[in-house]
Length: 575
Ligand SMILES: *[C@@H]1O[C@H](CO)[C@@H](O)[C@H](O)[C@H]1NC(C)=O
Ligand SMILES: *[C@@H]1O[C@H](CO)[C@@H](O)[C@H](O)[C@H]1NC(C)=O
Ligand SMILES: *[C@@H]1O[C@H](CO)[C@@H](O)[C@H](O)[C@H]1NC(C)=O
Ligand SMILES: *[C@@H]1O[C@H](CO)[C@@H](O)[C@H](O)[C@H]1NC(C)=O
Ligand SMILES: *[C@@H]1O[C@H](CO)[C@@H](O)[C@H](O)[C@H]1NC(C)=O
Ligand SMILES: *[C@@H]1O[C@H](CO)[C@@H](O)[C@H](O)[C@H]1NC(C)=O
Ligand SMILES: CC(=O)N[C@H]1CO[C@H](CO)[C@@H](O)[C@@H]1O
Ligand SMILES: [Ca+2]
Ligand SMILES: [Ca+2]
Image (cartoon, rainbow, N blue to C red; front, side, top):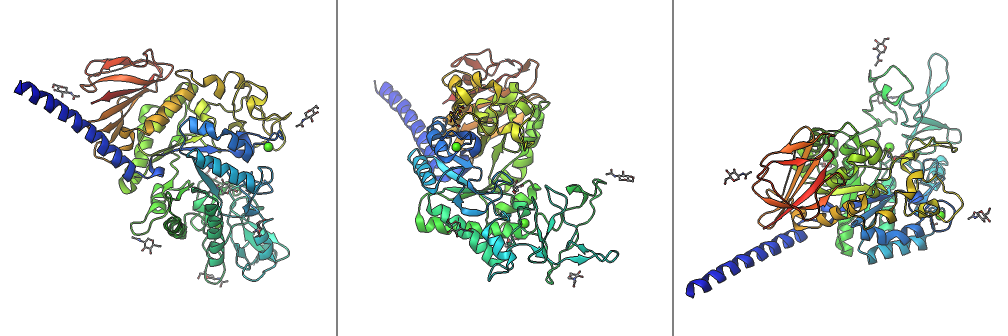
């Protein structure tokens, strides 16, 4: 009797201990992992997400009407590509007024309504911040041309040089533009050249000028006051250019990479990219944002940087040891994945990031697709698209999804026949909501880009509630991302990943003594077997369509197990 009571007590206290551990780890997760550290980010390309008024172009009211969908699929925060007033020479990345909504997208009232609705649903809004340049139609540039008080030095102006042979006017240096050959354009009125990294319609700011920096801080403050939660900062490597005290600019050196003198690659970009001041301005913004949060309360106002730069440079954007800058810099390593990709490639690309960014900053994020690259279902292959969704969400840190990839949309499948066809249009076609006209994107007669012809079989409505559909898998993974095990990644043993064979990738996520998840993904077209992975018996909780198993099936991992070609699964063990 005594014994039996004792026995019951002890198994009860064991149970209590378990609950306690669960409690501790959830408290731990809640207090120690900030929202941006383990988030599900979702990129909306506003032109293509949802059209509310039938003009064939997506808009803010359209986005607002679809916010419940983002909630449904477990998104934490959504980042909108630029929605600011723009002549659209570069699809909104050429801004005339940083605090005005582009009429094509709606009004400031529409914007406020969108933010209010998002917050009501518990979603965060991230705005694109484009500080590398403005449009040449921006009032600031017009004032700078006229050398108005305070605006004289607002952009990157330089005097002409004179060609000693011909006596003709020459640009201040040999700098190139990424989009057109010559980086300098002559302004007749001001009788000087201005520099532009991109189009001539996009003059680069002179970020050394404190007034420019002040203006940009005011722009951020303007949007923060309207409830914006975070910024995605565009084109960080291109912020600063080298300028000598005497106002001249040094020539770039020949790179030797190509003999095509008109190519961007002809010169090195020692003086026009990755200048040390780039990190400094990020530290300045961080200080401003942290102060703003202290004054106004609420969650961390984060910054996410877009930068194609060497990893050491990216690391400095986050912190150089004393100063702190961005919370996240986007990790584009998985953008390199192709249809020949193996598990070993994924491991190498993951290590490439983790060895530096995780080691130094405990920071990771995984971008699989975006508005500048072929969609994952096309680029990595339809067989591996769901697998990459599983992997991007199971790795520690934050996942970043480009709209439409959650249903496995593919690149536009026909020739580009419209005027002003951009090479990136195939991945920018309208969101495929349902099987009705224009895929439910627009009630208009035509859409700004054609809808992909596969929309009747590939759309949100069809995939809703279908077990093993891309959308279902996506939702399962964003839900898992909120679990204790997926949030416990800062603890010792919280995660591990490796290529078990050339083709099989494994990820382990653990909340010690509480639960464990294991992802197994076969990148290859051959059956693979694995022996004695662990002594645990685990349960299938996520399965892609290549798996012969069923939800809830158990598997003893101490024995030999098989993976079918392209099979990807998530297994769970509970203490
Ligand atoms: C932007 O628009 C706002 C409101 O319409 C106006 O007050 C402001 O001066 C404009 N700024 C620029 C740089 O044109
Ligand atoms: C300006 O300064 C740089 C660096 O000190 C020097 O190389 C260049 O010759 C100077 N140019 C003029 C026009 O004085
Ligand atoms: C450039 O031209 C030289 C001389 O013709 C040749 O030796 C070299 O390989 C070329 N370089 C590249 C990168 O094509
Ligand atoms: C980090 O950058 C800041 C701003 O440039 C500088 O003052 C500081 O000395 C740097 N810290 C290190 C460790 O280099
Ligand atoms: C669509 O076409 C019909 C018939 O040509 C026309 O009556 C209607 O106004 C058009 N709608 C829009 C939104 O352009
Ligand atoms: C499984 O258990 C056996 C016997 O207890 C032990 O030798 C082996 O190392 C364990 N394997 C794993 C993967 O934990
Ligand atoms: C890295 C990069 O190119 N960022 C942006 C800076 O501006 C150009 C031109 O407007 C945009 O196209 C880029 O996306
Ligand atoms: Ca519209
Ligand atoms: Ca610049």
